[in-house]
Length: 434
Image 1 (cartoon, rainbow, N blue to C red):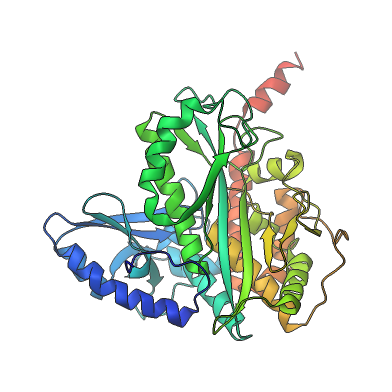
Image 2: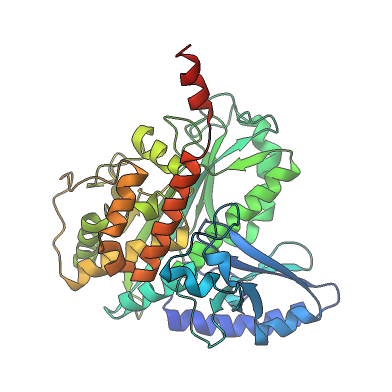
């Protein structure tokens, strides 16, 4: 077994750290070879990586010393412009200094013959973790869950629409579970299978909407699940580009259509055995109670709310059901929950962190789960409503004041950008007034 394999199932933070140490020694030898290259990756708030490419022999040294990345990567817009400064963002925008990125060798993934991608954790020069870094947010919530003697196993599935250079879907109609009709996708998908062979893909299939495909990653520890979900998106975009196509992760590719980020979660005791129905029920109750307050995490963009309002399998109502895809939370079997809130545009580290934060609060308060099918509320129906919910304070209690302030700043900027643009909708409705 390679130290870079993705083991199935849960791992505590301590066990994962041990795996990282073992992998680092192997990675050091790999990166010391002539021609080796390291692509250092840092997850940002927009479900993508900030990246630095390093060549041998310096790449091997970075395993010991880390490497710098400008602090504003956790406080920038999708266009990579600094967000308007608020108190929580001042450490990241004042002076635009460097954060130190420490490599997590357990994340290493081969991008080419001698090119390795490795995800890292950001810290300030003092050694203090960068609190707004999505990986730090996940680690914080995992530590709180471990105080209850539990660790999660996470499986993430993303939907994507493949489009031609002319922006047309690569299938002319919905192809749910189909083989016929997907022939145009076949060469791209063959290359994608090869390129993602080390990521532990469980399944892939054609989906409901034109050009849509779903890829499911096997269950693994929470940090690996989130990192690998972003690695999968990165590789998918690269493979699509080689075929003259584009991989579209918009939450709503069109009205009535949805690209989702479904998160499957089960709980195990810290020492291994799985299956805690009572704990899972309290966890479920906590998520149902706080999902509305965390709407901005599941739906971070203007487009997110098109998905929630128009896509039939993107339920806004908060209820759970056994093997019910019309529910926002589906119980799969007896010990696995599928959370169906988030769109494909959501940041997976933050989505998982928010789920764990809300679920852990349910555990701490020993909440009882509602009856299956019982309506427990609704997610926000608009970005304005989601922003108001962020500012009420419950998100700050769950994720921390700085993370809540960061999310509010991101959503305000999203609204400002949308209100400062002219779209096809404006033009079409304007023409009707003539």
